[in-house]
Image 1 (cartoon, helix red, strand yellow):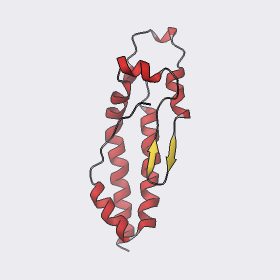
Image 2: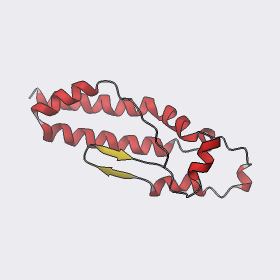
Image 3: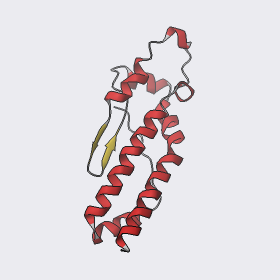
Image 4: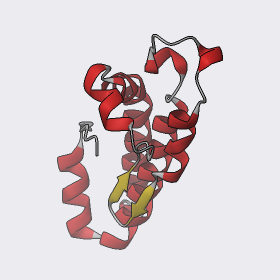
Length: 124
């Protein structure tokens, strides 16, 4: 398994809002997590993999295996390649760090949007 953490600014505000109305926070945060997972999947591209082997000689299985590595539940999301050789490839080519870095701005926007909606609903 390959682990990469992505930091989200404003998480403390989300925690405070959760104490007030957990059902509202849960709805919007779960949406942000799901949207973030798909942002990461979108960034699983050749430009972020940076393989040395020419595209015509690769099967593309590692890239496609991201679709099978998606797990979401309340306040949790995870995505990663399920190809058995992924960790060996990653050891010499840290593609997950590049994918996470490329995804970071979009993920931050999803959580900022969630916080905006949470704040709006709490203000009603």
